[in-house]
Amino acid sequence: MENGKKVAVPFTERAFIRNVMPFAGFIFIVVLFAVLTGGQLFTAGNLKLLLSQSYVLLIACVGVFMVMTMGGLDFSQGSMLGVCSVVVCFLSNVNIILAIICGVLTGGIIGLVNGFFNVKRKITSFIVTICNMYLLRGIVAYATTKTPVYGVSNITSYNTMPFNLTFTLIILVVAFAVFQYTGLGNRLKAIGAGETAARFAGVRVERTKMLVYAAAGMITGLAAFINSIKVGSVTSTAGNQLETQIMIALVLGGMPVNGGAKVKFYNIILGALTYKILTAGLVMLGIEPKTQQLIMGIVFLIMVAVFADRETGMIVK
Image 1: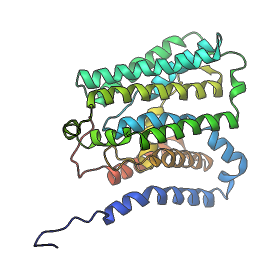
Image 2: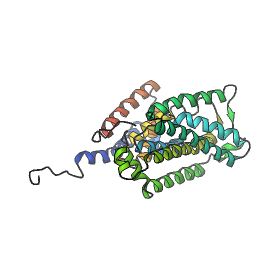
Image 3: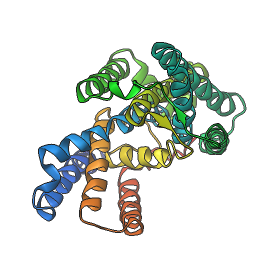
Image 4: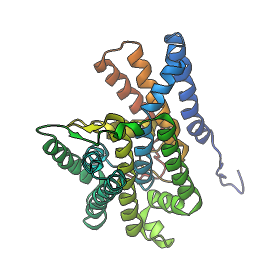
């Protein structure tokens, strides 16, 4: 109390819980499944398998992380991955470098479409991306109606742990450097906290949002390459439920659904690993898929309730 007025405490108990809870949750899940599976979940073979299943999710989370930081949502990522995977597999029969470039450009164009309708037409992001999710899913289904789209015969030869790990780490390191040291992170947080205030602070809101949607799509194009070399072909189910996995993973990592100043880059890595360990542990325990969905739904609701930034009074844009 100072001069009869309350002084705001910069590091409150709530802020401490918000920062610690994702790490505590990760440790709890690791210990829980280590005990319940008798340590089998964390054998060398299972850890290698767990990591191999995490690359696509980790990469795809980066783009959605940026979109969510500025207060948006993107539910088109799974279908977008499917379309980009079709492009990568099809063009890999011509040239693998061309396939990667065109896969990335395809994702960027889809991202620009999302950005156009959200930024220029003022349609809420989750409405735009849900519509695109169904549209793109239809394109994938059409492209794979008669037969899966196969990549070049040796495309799976790239699917090695050193290559995938290096590829993923490069993307994460570059994204971290851009987010942390170029000022982009602060601009995205400012937009997430309040677009009007961000404009008065000199942030070019519309241009930044268009850029981020395009970048998110291009990053998904990179994830599609990893997906393609892993399976060697694309079916109508490519990328199914990826958008849900991304959302749950980011929230498990402590990401506020409505973005803003409390976003941390570690939300990506911590969330993706927590999600993969949780799902792998439930599978190893022999729990039925419907029960797994119930458990994941409960966990997701709890984490959203804890990490939603109600102080700003913001809604998803």
